[in-house]
Image (tube, rainbow over all chains, first blue to last red; front, side, top):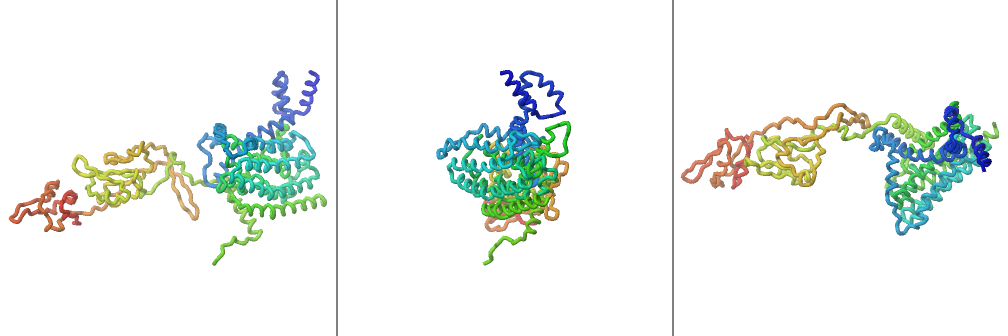
Length: 363
Length: 242
């Protein structure tokens, strides 16, 4: 028994997140019996990736922060002030905390016509495609599961999202939700192929789809190697997140929230963050494929955290770019969005594959 | 019939327009303009002609009822005061802030203010009595600066200026039209002598003649207060320009 524990601890200690700055403190803490083991467990790279970054904790923190960043940024662009009254000195930064508390205590209404078990399950289940891809996205050198097919798996998980949104709309059993669901399906057909093809172009260019290898290969970031693919991927991600200007399934003005229309309370809170989860995952993937993942000037004292910080910074940049589209463009009609998806973006992504092939053959 | 169609842009024009939009967004995100006035902490500077809460100067009022007659919302009622004269009361539940009353007041007894944020406890209290209209309502000033909107070129800009905006407007008194009372139809006068009784200045005097009572108006001393005009039972007295 003790031998097994020893072996496990040795396994964990062999693959720790190295932080030279904190080494003296960590060495003392490792000496304390239970706390040391717990710390060793958390700082074990795969678990650290799943729990802290880019996994659960970072996702949670971003979900708390991202809607605030969005509202504040869009308000700035549109000459407004944005959230202000809750903690005015910090510019209302805990607005979403207050909102989520309100969601938490609000009654969850399950209306009579809803397909009850699914109605309650789908919002919770929709965390599956949100959390699983994070296991395959590396933050610097920290990754939960190393796989030679990491990029494809992330893409596959991302394309699972619409399934859960369709489920929400179907379980709601309301006409607004149905219309929103049908639109979601349409938009899904619009962006999915362009998204996959433009990611495929990058995989062709790198010759591998192992996330760690991809981020290691980019001395020149992918956005310079293949800007066409980056543009196509960016527009397709904007469509995939179903936010303005492609907020077609939700369409507050005419569908009052589309698939979300029947939800209230904490279930609505869970659905509300789906699009932000999607923004995070797609931004992470974009950072990995086009911006070099965690590569950047290395900060020696932070060790493994250096790559992590570069990854988070780049991801934030992409997320802000995705979010700021809301302030720039009005919402497209469904047919316009489909035309954009199938015509220019699909063409761009096809050209991108050609560009990649040429670069591979020439260089 | 003309058909409205979307303009046909080339790819280059499309890209240019997208770039312009993104450029504007980035510029505004870095150096944002703002047109929001954070109200209790700063007030918008209103022009002197702002139609706000009314205050009332009873010394100038001649009880002419002009304000009550002209009020389109029937918000003004005249109420008899202890000195026997009639003064306006305003029901702010009905008032539409058209300021017709102010415009119609010949003596400038009603005065405008820039106050637009009076709160009442209930609907009954919105009926503002004459005594409450003499002084402006109590205001808790939280503002340290005021805000002006400036239009330069095509854009609206907001300019913040330190200091309090004075809410009371000091209007010069209206150029006074001298009026005196005159009898427009002496044949109809019944000689009831009510006008003589109400006149505070002894302008109207009566004397008994053979054929009845003869009324005389001393127009030199008449102040044009209009009390006799209101009381005349035969409605033969009018205020006319001197």
